[in-house]
Length: 526
Image 1 (cartoon, one colour):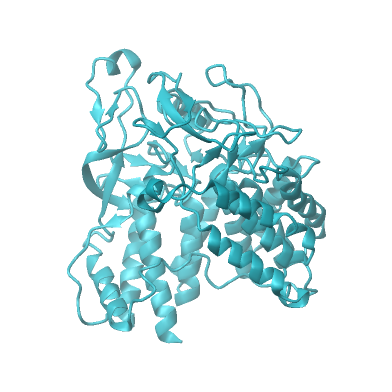
Image 2: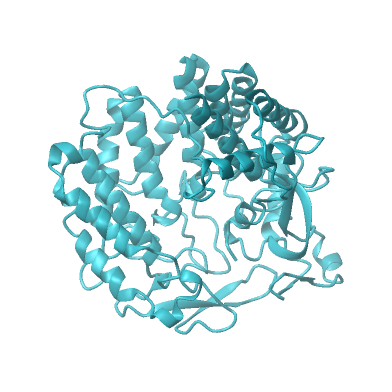
């Protein structure tokens, strides 16, 4: 089960027949205003958002079901909505979008932890209500172990803290409004304070080791590469330096870049792991993440090391990448095993290069276990990943062949001048690179026409979850049946793909569709 289930399962907007005529600029602007007014006036809670909603607002979800008083920090939640609002402001100059972005900032600042970071979600009803969520919905999420315990601290997991910081940076840079500088500085302080002397970062901070998941050691203090923690943090520090010229971030940034070199394992397994102990040995995390090396993490670290070379011109960041690329080539699955284009196993056993697969066991009550096995059979997860190692190798070889001054010409660290932020933060959704103008215009016409009379784009919500019931009551209820035939115990509040999807409201759909309209306006007005 993908831990970002709602992110991937609610993005299918219901289609309407394509229209031939391209809408006028005025019509597109009106569509954007209507869609945004609905989100800000009907959907937002104190300026913030979750991921998806039923039309009557009787249920709503972030990564798990949320209370009506809650908003979500993980994408595509509140920071992502703020970035989209700023994009719309840049494209139109209309104050409606800047005001919506300020509302997002207000929600995030309200929920900012005293240490400077953020948790997965914010509950405007206060800590008692949030603890209640953990005692009920969170603790019963069988497949989402990170949601079972309330630590009371912040997380770098899933990028929420860094995405919030990037949004506050962008909002501050827009008008240099001083009310956003203090919370921005708190984020920077948080990233610096959370860093270990060796250069890496824990998953959560301030450190809290009080929780043991069914007897497994707490993993949240481990040096973490999983979900791009080290990548996001080094990118953020570089962004702060290039836009604000903050000298204090340079030393932590260099240490953060150095942990990538230190964490790469020696031959014959020159890859990276999801997380490490303090002495840089691969470590486990959730029961679905055994101590191992990870192919997708290795590919991500290679790409980040290439970026570090572009930032510095220092060849130490390139020195051992060929070994890592060769290792990934060796791990590629036989063609007959590359189902649906998946090329590599996820987890690789330390010392043997054998692929590790996970067989689920345990019950609904939180003693979920994942037995490590060596063959991908029925009921076994984390089978493999889609990795394009040939393209990654070409990227390495291209950069290595460049003269140093050319490779580093866009460096945020070597330029004496501050660098502005890009005009847009949300990438234009890919609709096929071979679309001709007529097809693209028809797609925009369809998009404008599909906004309903209420002001939102109806979206098929393929994911759902069981409503929380007390254990004794839930034990009497029948299991739900997921689309793959799996029986979901009525006590399990984890999201799953349903056989009976319903129509609802999706922040991901709003962000994607608005971004398409913004980039269309930008292209046609040039």
